[in-house]
Image 1 (cartoon, helix red, strand yellow):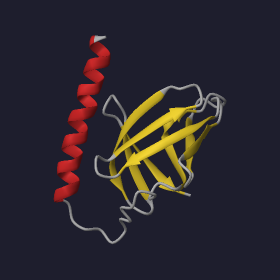
Image 2 (cartoon, rainbow, N blue to C red):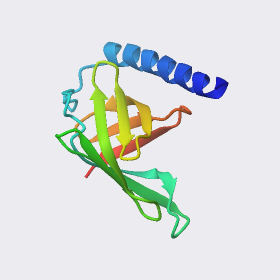
Image 3 (cartoon, rainbow, N blue to C red):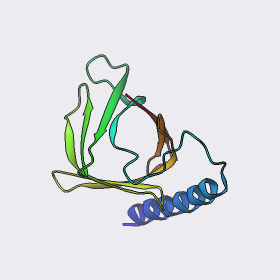
Image 4 (cartoon, helix red, strand yellow):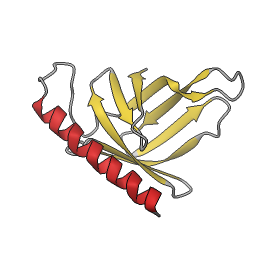
Length: 129
């Protein structure tokens, strides 16, 4: 229970810091900033180990405009479900079909990439396909 509480406190602190940095940042012409700005396919090449080759694998999120997503990574079970991106708080909430929910911080979002922070504070850059 203490670890779960600590994880939520960490996520909240990262969210507050991220909002402060984003609100004080430059206006970037590449930033589309809308609520549907995650719509599309995004790939990261350093998030998961490919369970087939045991090298760095690539994982891909496809976010659809109807609020659903698909996730694929070679050697892992594909996943799908619903997502919600809160532009004001820079949070991405993902709930898979089994009902498991994850909340991530999006520390940077442009038309060509986004940076995802997980509950451990690790960051991963996803590039638009």
